[in-house]
Length: 192
Image 1 (cartoon, rainbow, N blue to C red):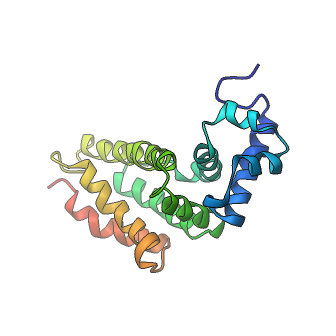
Image 2 (image 1 turned 60 degrees about the vertical axis):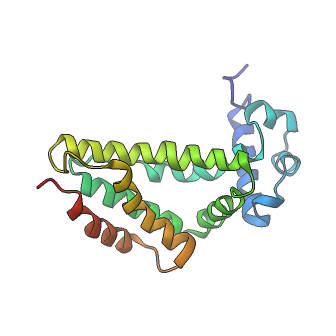
């Protein structure tokens, strides 16, 4: 028997994640069902329900498994450089239709799906903000950033601009924009 929360085989787990991702790309999150995922993956519904509580969790895992390695936070010795690099990778990911379309769809559907909203909150707020917060706290500890830095506000200022472009203004989003955001925000974060 495999570890709890995982299908019995890595092959079955990958088949479920691949099926969920391809379905959300093809038909959108709202039209995806556990039955459809199971049929596409060639597994029983019970295989899915043993590992995930529902559709939201499966789709979140599928979308994030493809992106997670690129969204890690480096430690270059400079908080500014760490965030510039990570935000550049984030903006590049957001310009890839294979990621952006399902991700934006998940954000939209989360307004009406409490389970999905919770899963997104865990990934966007808890996990990603924790990574950015760690980078900023290292900068404070090194004396690079202000000792009285409000980490939450700094994260909002940096990443809010990215999400605004992605979801609202639909202006170009690329690594150059991420670099410009960091350059505009960091003077207010630096230690005197």
